[in-house]
Length: 142
Image (cartoon, rainbow, N blue to C red; front, side):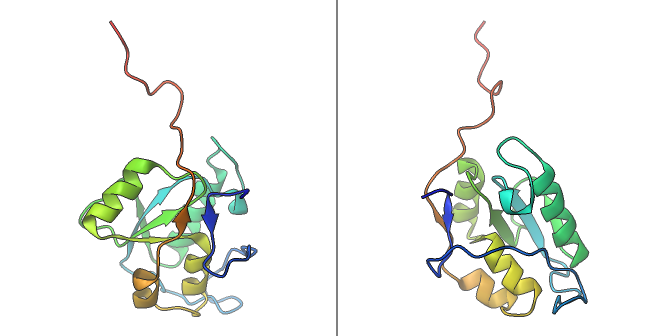
C-alpha cells in the first residue's frame, strides 16, 4: 500500500475540492458540525510535515459551514482521517464514539452523494499506518 487509507471501494479515487454552490456542492452541508483533522492530506497539497493540505481542508470544511477544532471532545462530530493519522486523536474518537471519515467520504457528503447520518454510520477508513510523531516532542531528560 502506498497510503494509510484505503477507500471502501477498494480503488483509489481522485479528490477534487468541492465548492459550495458549484458543480453540485451543497451550500451549508456541514452547518453546525465540528471536525478534528488528523494526519496529512497530500491529495490537497502538502506531504508529511507540510500544512498546506490541512489549511486547504480547513478552508473547505469552513466554506460549507463546518468548524475545525484541534482536539477531540464531546462536541466533535467527525474526525477526518488523513495519511499517517495521529494515534491519540483516533483513539480519543473511538472512545467517544466520534465518527472517523476520510476525504472521499467528506467529498461525497459535500456534493450531496451522502448524508451526515450515512457518513457517521459508515465503516471507518482502514488505517494501516500511524504517524511517528514529530521530532522534538520527546520528553526532555534532566
